[in-house]
Length: 149
Image (cartoon, rainbow, N blue to C red; front, side, top):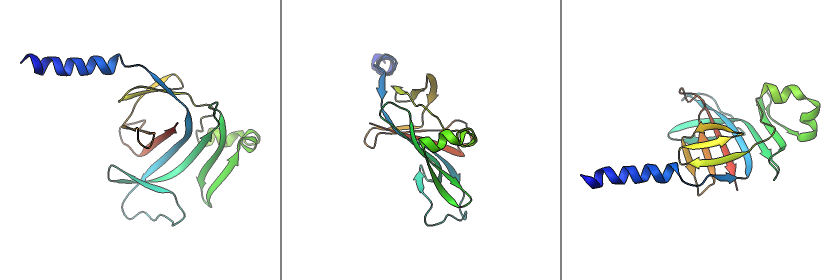
């Protein structure tokens, strides 16, 4: 009886008081879930996560200091890539696609990260590929990935 109480309690304490690990972000990806039968072109970037297929709609690459380097966005003619300088000229692209100009991420525990000082519950942290997977709402239509060093 004592073991069944102590083991979960110790696990909770270790996760709660584990050191917060700040990570260097390499890229940020937003993808939308595609339903079976949805036509995806051969050149489209897709991946499978927990049995669902996702189409990459936005990918942002970051410099070592966490600032935006370039962005790739999905549009009617396929993927378009914009450099940081081009994004400065076309500010509506940043707003229209919800691009994050600066990315600071800390891993708080296996279920929680701080993204630009906002706590977000994560679906999975893959330490091998150094990828964080999370959803912003319950319908799980859009998934977000953060690759880090």
